[in-house]
Length: 327
Image (cartoon, rainbow, N blue to C red):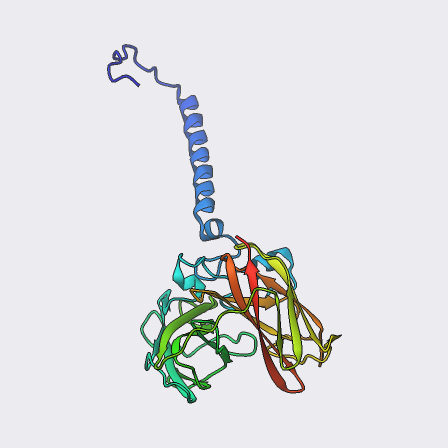
């Protein structure tokens, strides 16, 4: 628009009183409608989506609940993670998020012998958190894995009255490790929001890296063969089918473990980003198998190491399967 427009010479004629009142009423109604629209668009539900609940990242369990998925209401912290290189907290790679902090007694552990890893979870007020929601029968799930994705451990430590936790780790090989605590506060500002926090730990000594298995989608353990079928794409929901066989025959005597017939945890090769994959069904009987459906949302392309835990005859087995995720 030109800055040199001629001045207006005609004055605006006043509106009759009745017309002016009607105009003011219409304008007020339009303004109110606009305000309601803006409020709805700016609300947390509108901006973050119904699936939010994991620290700003879409929670696959919640989105599946909206669509009627079988795993609805069966959520576990860490189901989804931020793309490696993005917000580290969402991938379980931060020690502090939303005011909650994982604080260990020590950042080193001895090599070759069982060790107790002691830590606390403190809240936004700086005090130890002592109220935790039960997720898959446990108040806290604790994981350990070495940088080369060997030595996986999944524990359920006990909490002392003062909020201190002690995770009884099996002997660790020398190298760089990362330890994860997965939990949901049951009080305070973070009540109901699942978190996965982790810390690096140094185990002194010399150890060469172990190569990750080829991404064949299959692995053996204790005479069993575990096969993972599916073609996940980074950032998209996908269905995975896990099948357990032994000597070529389907295994149908899988026992319930953490409310399902198997538990599946994934770590991204290289940065150790964390993801928990949800079983689509709960354990409804004394035994199950051989096929187990899982819901997966793996956020980054590349190789993911999947650790499948299942139980037969009172013995827990852990199979490590490498799965390739497309970009």
